[in-house]
Amino acid sequence: MKNLLTILVVTAIIISASSCKKTSSSNGTISQWNYNGTNYQGSTTTFATSSSTNIIEANDVKDTVTNFVLVSFGSKPVNNEKFSVIGQGGSIDSTSCGIIAGSIDSTQVPNLLAQSAGSTTDSVTVTIVNGKYHVSFANVTMLEYKSLFTGISGTLIQQ
Image 1 (cartoon, rainbow, N blue to C red):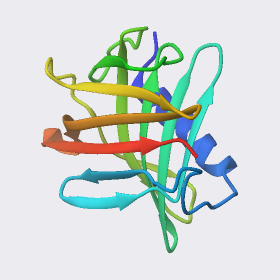
Image 2: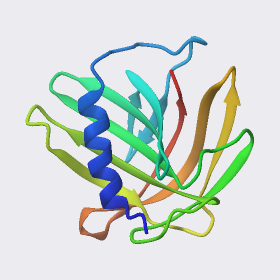
Image 3: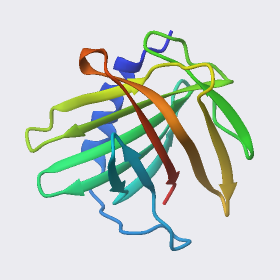
C-alpha cells in the first residue's frame, strides 16, 4: 500500500539529488501551478520511475526555499490517460494518483503543505509530447494542515 507521506520522503530525496537548475524545457515552456492563490513556475521538472513509483515533480526555487508539487502514479502513465485523484491513506493504483504540495528550506527538511483530499470529481490528465510528460490538473481539492481545504491547478512539463 502506497501512502502519501512515504511519497513525501521520496520527494525530499529527489529534490536533494537534483543539482541541475533549468529554466525551461526543451519545447520552450515551463511548468506552472497555482496553490492557495500563489503562482509558481518550475525551475526544474523531472519524471522518475521505478518498479513501484512513478513521479513527476516540479520545483520552484527562490532564495533558500524550494516549493514543489508532486504527482505520484501507481503505474507509468501513457499518452492521453486520465487518473482519479486519491486522498490521504488511499492506495495509488493504475487508474489513480496522488498530489502533494510542499516546501524545503535550507535545512533540507521537507514541509508538507497539503495533499490531495480525494474528491470524486478531481482528475489528472497525462499527455506525452515529443517524449516528455505533460501532467495537467485543475481545482484539485487539497487537504491542508488543520483540515483546511484549498485547490491546486497546474501543468507540469517534464524537462
